[in-house]
Image (cartoon, rainbow, N blue to C red; front, side):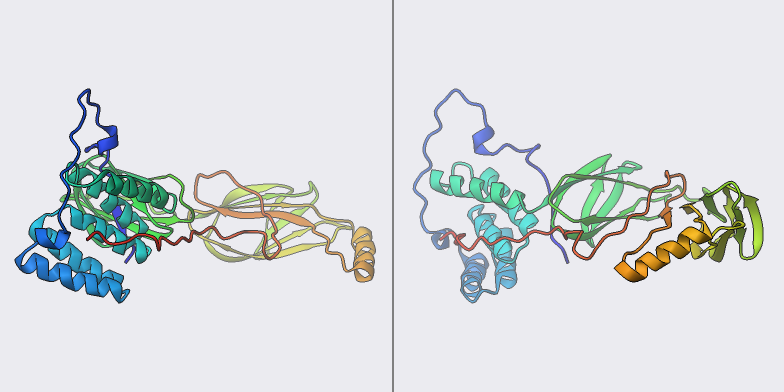
Length: 332
């Protein structure tokens, strides 16, 4: 399960953002964290330290969280952030470091505060800030199976690179999902809109085919002539064979698979038979490839038609992130 975190800095201020004309008193020197814990919290803390040393960061995090839930000692949030970072759950580590700054104000040293701020800033470079706008208000939202509770209008979360799924529900509405594929740590805005029960949803029953070609070219689909020259019209979804022919020209043949509600646009230039013969001879000599048709982009219904581009292997770099925060140590 991928890790996410709700942003809450807008609601609570970290010490560096607090405006005050008075000089804050330095925090009292903290005693060892273990001495501030007792009973089940102390037992979970001791287990977590051993697991951390064994590099079982996920289980160590669970034990530190158990100690935190029992004691509400904010110093445990730093240890939870250290585990999350080591396990490469960067979004969760950011949230825990920022909670450490907020809840630990007055109980942590200036050095601890500086390290937490530095950690949060560095980790934010590895996550994307995602704003989800949704309707109706008062919907219950989950992210990757984890509940975010009842939300209004929009929420902002941090997500790591990868595929994430928002799910929304509200009585009287059909459940809905919005899948987001984070390819790089950049801001993303998405929308999830639930449909009221009983509202008919129009389902596309045709596809749109647009062919731009020579004025003398006869456009045929599955052996049936559609037009001479350009064609723009609705066709039945599914597999089809497109043929464009004209006297003295090289015939164009192509198999198409059209989805309901989609638009397929083709721009085809028919070449003279003599020119094709000449180019074929040149190709055999030089090994060159001669393009003779462009187009073919499949778009969602209502979207503008786009071009068709060819890429060589390696032309498209895969975005991703990597990082290591081995210098993060546990709070004692």
